[in-house]
Length: 205
Image (cartoon, rainbow, N blue to C red; front, side, top):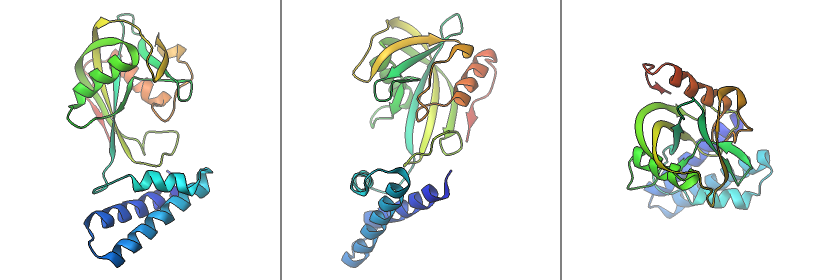
């Protein structure tokens, strides 16, 4: 991970925790200044406006923790993997997204797969929990843990959504352009390895 992003995230985490716990008006002003400094660092290196970044950072409340991103892993009988084409960047990803409050990891996976692909599934196996900082090709403003949960189709059918424009199944040697903020080629290959070795233990870290 780029050092500037590591520093900016750390400054943001300190400011967010300080704003959550501090009651002193002067301390809060200092934490707000740190938050603005973090936004300016990120804006300087990404080309986005400090106001836009600052708004995203200010929206983060409570004690800072990594965000949880669930990805549904669905293979056909022929060994091809379900991917959906994201309207946001016209690239392909495993169906998934942020875990929602009130739903378990498996319930989130079932929900995301249904909404983004049209398929009804049943969760079968936890394949991996990865720290996105250690397993991504693109630096991101926030810190994520990515959960990969293998599921089996039990109904439904391919259907586009407000977030996806195409649904398809792909073999390991025929992957389309991937949405790298959502999943990398190395992560996809990890999933095919798990398919070839059903006894493979879950991967973490």
